[in-house]
Every structure is written in structure tokens, then in C-alpha cells.
Amino acid sequence: MSLRSPLGRALGAGSAKDGVRHWWMQRLSSIALVPLSIWFVVSLLSLPTLDHVTVTAWMGQSWTALLLILFVLVATWHSQLGVRVVAEDYIHGAGAKTLVLIALTFAHALVAAAGVFAVLKVAFGGAS
Amino acid sequence: MTEFRLPPNSRIRKGVTHKAPAGAGEVRTFRIYRFDPTSGENPRVDTFELDLKSCGPMVLDALIQIKGVIDASLTFRRSCREGICGSCAMNIDGVNRLACTTSMLDLKGEIKIYPLPHMPVVKDLVPDLTNFYAQYASVKPWLQTRTPAPPDSERLQSKEDQERIDRPAACILCACCSTACPSYWWNSDRFLGPAALLAAYRWIIDSRDEATGERLDELEDPFRLYRCHTIMNCTDVCPKDLNPAKAIAEIKKMLVERQS
Image (cartoon, rainbow over all chains, first blue to last red; front, top):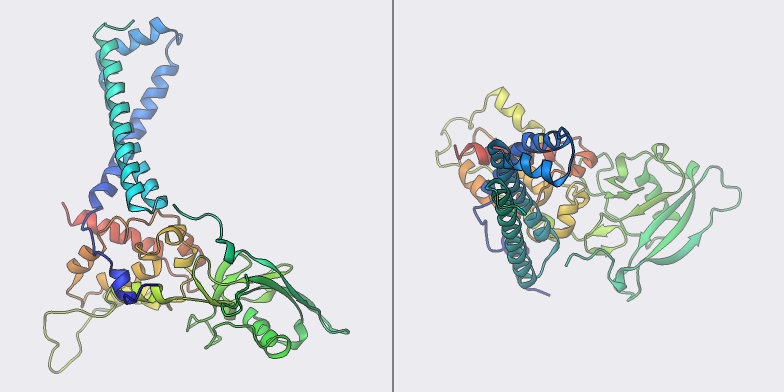
């Protein structure tokens, strides 16, 4: 049992003076995802077929490639912001929490880079 | 990790049943959480059958009757019996509320009574609110100014400015809201919880206060403020019909607005 005063414990290490940016970026990315997700679903569904040739041809168009890259980046960024909060909510050990946050950040960076790379590869004609 | 299951010494076992006396008129059954830390035993749920004709209409009336007539060891806090002191906050039929303002007529079937959720229990229905009060104290719930008070009058406030703080200032610190909040369950050591944040908001928007910036600085923290995920249980359960969720949203808005 700690002999620290209850107020001392409640004050803890003080305010991090941080959090507004995270909160605002999460809202901003979710706003951006509304039109991007609608565009993505509607565009895919309006393709005549969903075979490899049709979809890669669609991805090769400049506007499609541009919007797909934006979609991948914004979606992974939004996911990174959200999943970080979930980890902070439920993982309480400082060591485990840090490790999980590092792993999550790396995983999201990998997904984002892979997504962008895939779109660029198709768009610039290297797809096979 | 967050604990989703009660620790072994907190798991509830079957308790004793106190039958209603023969010839009782209108019998109502109560299942009440019992825990005595000095006994070394796990908590249990006791069953009490009470003749409703023997007591008043509120849940608190029934608890007082049970304590007075059936089992004097039943422990709970109560004082004003009219919803202004906040002492008798407890979990009644799965909802945090005040026993004194909850009518038994509004509840169906057996009435289940537990202490406020996810708090250390002192005894029976009495939770340990030490951390809750410390968090309230941590937001400095008093007027902070640099301008000296006028020598011959009070610090004035317009009627409109008073109306803004009128509702948030009506909080009775019963802890129904904070202990209904899952974010507070998992992180009450660092998340201030709806009650303390509502108190902070009440001083942030007080037109006489001159520490608005410092107060916002103190709240700008991923845990103190931003553990609130807008679940809104706080506003649902508030027995005074206050809106801590909206107060927290307003604080978040002010923090964004002062950046641009």
C-alpha cells in the first residue's frame, strides 16, 4: 500500500500538455474517409467486371491511382490513431504498452507503404 | 492488462435468505451485496424479503427498514434522503442511482442492490471514494483570480454568465457518472472521469475566473481528458439530469479552438 497522499497520486506525473492534435487528426481523417470510402466502393461496383485486367486498368488511371494512394494513407493513419487509443485503454504495464505501441506503429507504416507501392506499381505498368 | 474478471477474493458467493414473516402483506424481494473486509470471506449476495407496508416507497426506505428490523449489520451511506447530498449512490437493478430518489414502484421484480461498480469496497454498499475526491480536488474547484476583489462589492457576473454555470454547478458529487464510465473503470488512476471534468468545466466557463488557460493546460492530456470516448453513460445515469458528456465535449472544443 502506497503512503503517497491521494491528491499526490491523482496528480501523478502532471499533464502531458498533449492530446489535442491526436484528437483533431482523428476527426480530420474520419471526415476525409467519408468521401474517399464512398468513392472507393462506388467506383469498384461500377466496374463492368472485377477481373484482374479490368481492375488493374482502372487502377492505372491517374485520378484513380491518386485517390487510391490518398485512401490507403488516410485509412492507415486513421487506424493508427484509433488502435493506439485501444492499446492505451487496455494495456497497463508500461513496458508491454510501449512494445505494443511500437509494433502497431511499425505495422501501420508497413501497410501504408505496401499499399502505396502496390498502387504505384500497377499505375506505372509494372503489374504482373 | 485490464482485468475483465473479478479477482478470486472478490468473487461473489451465495448468501443467506431472510424470509418475510408469516402474514406479511405486500412482499418484495431484495438481493443485496454484502462484504465485510474484516471477516476474510468473499462477498456474498443476501436475500431479504420485506413487507412493503412496513416502510416508505423509496429504495432507501427499504434499506433503512432492513437495517432497522432484519439485519443491523447492513452498511450503506445515507444522509439527506432527498437527492441533494449524494451519499446513497449505489447500483440498483444494474443502474447507478440514488436510493433515496428511486421509487420501488419504478422497478420490476426482485430489486438487486450493489455498491457503485469497479470501486474498492469498504463494506457492503459503501465504496471507497478517496481517489474520486482527490481527482475532484486536483482540478482546483474554486475561483482563481489575479484581479483583486473589489473593495466594496462582490465580483459581479451577468445573469447570462451565471446561467451558464448554473447546471454544471448543481453536481452533488455522488459518483454515479464516473463509476458508470467504462473508461473510468479501466483507467481511473489517470482518467479524471466525468464528475471531475464537469467540475473543471464549471470553473473554465465561469466568467469571474482568471485561470481558464491554466485549467485547460492541466486537462490537455491523453489520459486526464482524452480517455473519454463519448460513451455517454455519465449523462444517462446522472440523477440530477446534468450533462457531463457535453461538458467534456465543450472542453475538447475549447482546446482545439485556442490553437487556431
